[in-house]
Image (cartoon, rainbow, N blue to C red; front, side, top):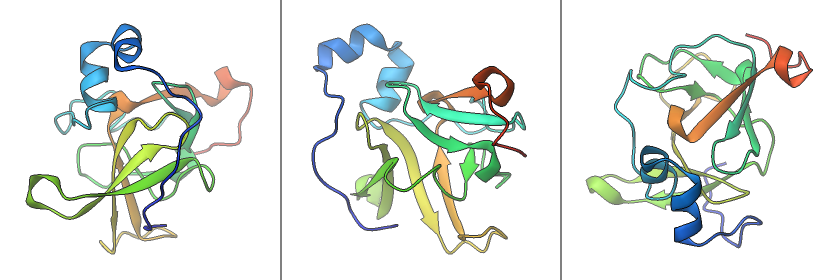
Amino acid sequence: MTEETTGTVPVQKTDEQWREELSPEEYQVLRKAGTERPYTGEYWDTKTAGVYQCRACGSELFTSGEKFDSHCGWPSFFAPLAEGRVRYLHDRSMGMDRIEVRCANCDSHMGHLFEGEGFDTPTDQRFCINSISVKLVPADAAGNNTADE
């Protein structure tokens, strides 16, 4: 799923609304495509079973069942929860050609997708996601146990 996806997203808010709803740190990453420093985020090494929601809109994006330890300092997943949960954009910033991952529901920046790195996962993809972009809802709190790690 590396093709660039376009179109409008269901949740659309003004910049002022996003600033009111998000902390300055969340706003910088989610709305301005910033990044947190490696090994500093809340979820980079968590093993808790559950669902990772977009911190901006609550859309369910990833599960702990697809999370793996890539030793990169950010939460890594080998696939999103389901097709259409995230969208992809070409990112040519910082002198690199990367694939940006955004929430398909509100267009918030999640992180980047890397392929062909040789990880022993079903997809050989690494969705490198900022912890501050997501919120983990533990399986027992969500009332389900479908995500296991």
